[in-house]
Length: 203
Image (cartoon, rainbow, N blue to C red; front, side, top):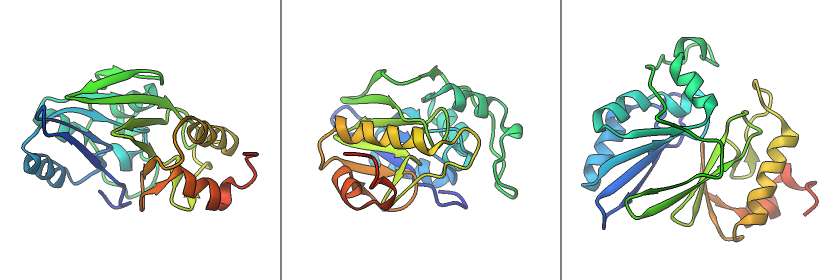
């Protein structure tokens, strides 16, 4: 979604008729159209971190559906004052929106019949969260296929990011599918074995 082509994910539980989206970063009409195509009600919007390319359409999508918005205190601050948080010149503006529940990691939410585990994974930004749902990890810009998120932006730290990635690798099965904030899907095992940025983590 949007000019930086951030991934937005839609997770639907057809049995309950409920669904949620993760990181609606732009193009709200495309997102709402995809939601309508499932025939499910949008119950929640989960945000991985407070960068505009991952939350640019939150206000439109959440308001239209009456869905609750979940994110970290970082996300709440950015969505509360969008004019202050344009990381890159020329990025589209986005509307202010309230975060209904501020989370810091360790929470568990159930949307329809799907349990969502919230994991604090700072490093790309101070308030980055990863969501474990449907046997998969939705990690925002923490980890990519063959790469990692930037750590040169405000609040970034390679050492902190590496520790966050290592925690996921040690906690979840190696074949766990990873849905990143940009690019293709991968697995924890693939990144542990082949990601050049993770070779010195002392597995």
